[in-house]
Length: 94
Image (cartoon, rainbow, N blue to C red):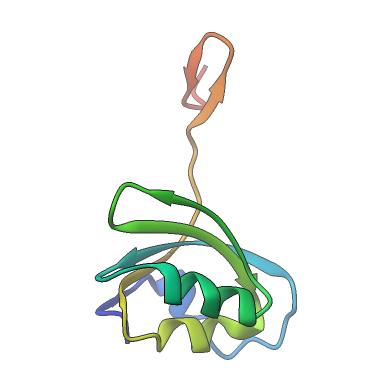
């Protein structure tokens, strides 16, 4: 089980909703098995970010299963307010 589970994720672990939720998963080992497991849960692996994070989306009703994976250090919602645009980085404050 992940040692850190963001409160917003924790509060959705019992959800029955099938909508996709975007997550950032902090990993403690090789990601090949993790990525396969995410796909088996009906999720999508979007990208690896560095050596320790994987961006994924999974059905909300699979969050409990994801949080119990042994290779994870953390599970957080992927909610960023920084968006790229043609002139650089848009922080949403302009």
